[in-house]
Image (cartoon, rainbow over all chains, first blue to last red; front, side):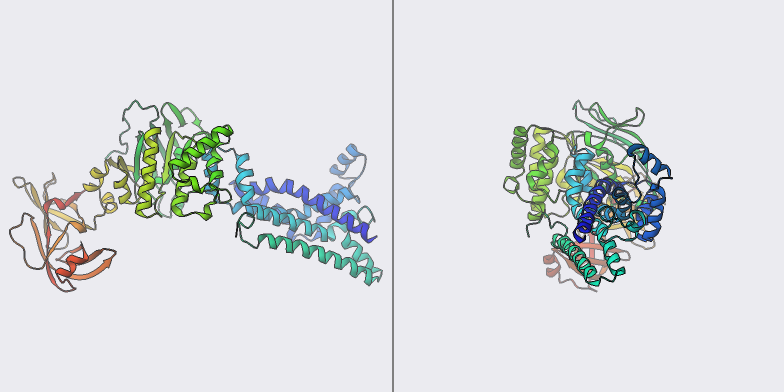
Length: 225
Length: 380
């Protein structure tokens, strides 16, 4: 039971982190480099999950992916299934919920790259694509790593959104944090403690890894010091 | 004083750079009020120095040429090839302009070695040629031994050389240099410039060199354009522009420590001089004759190093200006003693420490200042 929940949680965190990297790299790059006037609107939307109570987010996501909503019906017409109370629905909700934890550090990492370097790259004939992979990404990598670890850890520990859109179905949507809650409700404090401790250790190891990477300063990954 | 300087220079060099651009600059960017940048010049192979105070628009012009900023209108071309032409809606993106640009900060890629930096612009070149060109340029700029080090592991002068090599290995149509040598000592600077000159003897591209340091203008040589508040106000050889400045702004840049507002009291065409009285004082100066009516206000610039100091009243001199006064203060800066002397008007005089000692100058001591007529430059 514990292992099942732990495996499901890790699967969720890996999947959500991967999806958020795919979204976060271009979105973070755009936020760091765009001079569009309406950019603040996008920034506000991206930051919304930080301040929004998870239950509010979960409620609206549930309403949006429910079988009566346009999205729910469209999904049903394609796959024949439903997003609500499934693992896939959980992924959708978690991606939205962890979005700012990936995008904001990535955008900050990219924004810290000296604009002159990008201009130098352009005058040397490099396309925007090449500039991104050769200059922006390597120099902003600490922001990307931070974004990855934060959204991974954040997805591991989320509770409210998962409860709202996933329910509590062992093997499908029952994550570790919900299992802990279940065990406490059932007065199984010893089991709850084991699971809670394992989650604590995982989060601690992740953060230790992150800060150890960043310890040597901005160029820590390349410096020879 | 036309804004358009030398638009009509004709040479048959294919790679001549032609710049004629306008742009309204926003007030907020420099804090002061906004101004319109409008310049028209051409640059042939060799050094062309863009000289002016900070905020005059020098870097903006380089950015226009490189394609990093866009002017409101105009035309930029190298030879027959238009890089920007507002009338024909041409605006070649920076990465396709093939212009070498050495930024003030150098902008070397900190995570790459010297070799990787140099080869960055050679992505489309075959590997064998990429290697040979890298070695060749590293050889000519004396950085062959530094290719495996990162920018943080080499000295400022070496970084400079790597950055130059990175820009030149792509064989650009034009080279832009934005105050690249400001942080370097004179010897290092001179060596790097020699290497750059040697490189350009073979490749003969226009080199636009931006600076606000007059020593660099003299050192670089060929031609200088003076920019003030977005306009080219004068051009010529460094000697023409800086030794006989006609504009007060140039005079200040060119090191005229003494600038006086004077009214013309009398002209002496037979002597080739005119008498001017500095405003608010009774001090009169004999300046070279210019066609200015008596009573008009002019500005006279005198270099601090062109003024002689005597401790007794001199006689039998050709110099027309001998002014009695007393020393207000003395202050040594490097190998120059800067004296402030009150002769009714306040003069700044530069002396060597040796001269200061042998005359036993000190504050309060009465002195005579001797100024040749031709050391009084009438500015416009």
